[in-house]
Image 1: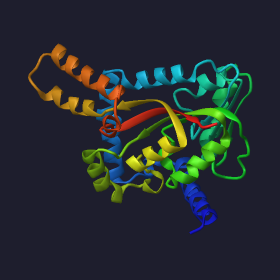
Image 2: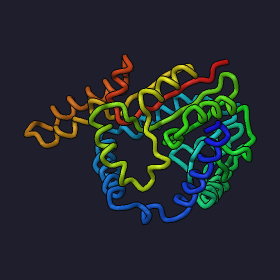
Image 3: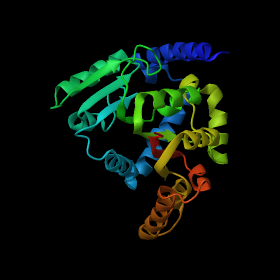
Length: 275
């Protein structure tokens, strides 16, 4: 299959993804997908909130973003707006939010119209499509987005094309690099209703990012600390359990080697286009 053929195949898959998100996606999910969502958005979300992991990620992203007053920012795959979309739109010199779903983008544009911005707009367009012609972005913010691209080489090429020579990408994505998580995802995948556009990062993908960009920083989430969930079932004092879990969270957050990252369920990164 040629590069052009593969791109056309992905664009057709993205059309189905657009239909999925334009409809009631929850209703379209089958039972296994709903069970997995309940685990991911229920138990794990409660755990993240308990130890303020979610807010810590957003705070880190704001630090990485820095002063946006002279920056052109692309909010990639932002749907109806992620947690930082309005922050980006309000503080950037120029902001463009894009998503496949025209319904969701319409909702984001309404939100943008309600805040003070310099130059901000939301567009329903496929990032890989020739219809999206904007380039020279200082920052591409991609929260929970990059793992939706099956052909990662094509994605890398597109990111480099859209970024300025030393522009940066800030990402947050699930990993499939630890054996327990890989086994769990493999068991679930045959029943997954959105599997055609869900491709958690593998070790190969992480190596490709390292080979094509300068990794400026990375933070692991739910590596060793995911096993801290078990502490809640032990007859130990709350202070002791909290102390133990916090140490595990810090270990994940500040990985010293690649193998430390591989243990994690999620990874947030800041990486830079090579000049």
